[in-house]
Image (cartoon, rainbow, N blue to C red; front, side, top):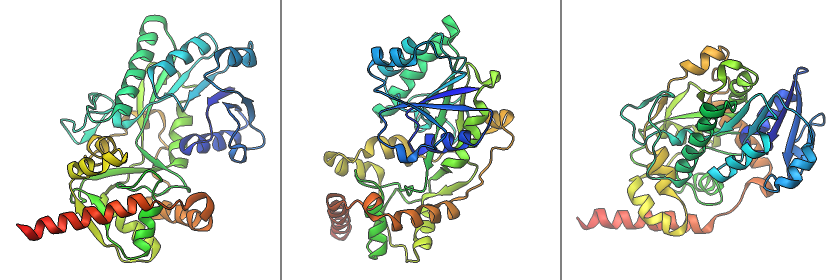
Length: 341
């Protein structure tokens, strides 16, 4: 069977491509700009071009037909409309990566199924994902376009540490604050529940949907089963670093009000996502993939990630002095307010 992935070198897709490259049943192709060739297995084919250049994509694909086409970098309705024009009639299954942040925040129940209402007034990213899903499902209902929707939650790999409150340059500055014994900001009181999924575990579920006729016209979230509070997440990171955690709790609303003027995006990432307790019911996905489980629990995954991050300083250790100084100002302001009352 033949698969084409749009992108294919990100956190989620890298694990999927690697898994399929070791499966003799699959011939794997990537369509991207070729900027991360070091992440591509040697037996994977690459089509180097810009997906937004429809004429070039059409020319390079020619009359090629794929059993599965996976879209990993479609964020707006215009992008999936482009894919529809390009790939209609060229695939038996189009798998679209949406987001679990599309589920209503907060929903009527903290237990999330695929039937939970899609609505997120706090995050444009999520609303765009919902609009993409609606366009694709309309094409499925009206024309039989063979779409499958996949909604990942918080998926990470060896290059990233899952953190709730971080700046525009990623999690390194938070790790550095931990190493220096400085307080680290945690949204709310740290007790909200969250799912973390290592990318190799996600790949098990995703590949089980590929070529599966029961997945056509359906939506699935793919997450691990491990549920942690944010207090447990930060403490696990600190334990892996061998340092004492110095947590400092701030409401998500205050973080958004003070941080978004600097472009940190907390209104969406916190109020519209991470500050809300969610527990994903994976029963629907497990019916098609009984082997889906948490093979890499967070206490192992975080050590895999930290080993890589600490040994690749130029790639992974991006200083963020703006975020660091903002954290100190938030702590000082909240302490001053508490003392003045």
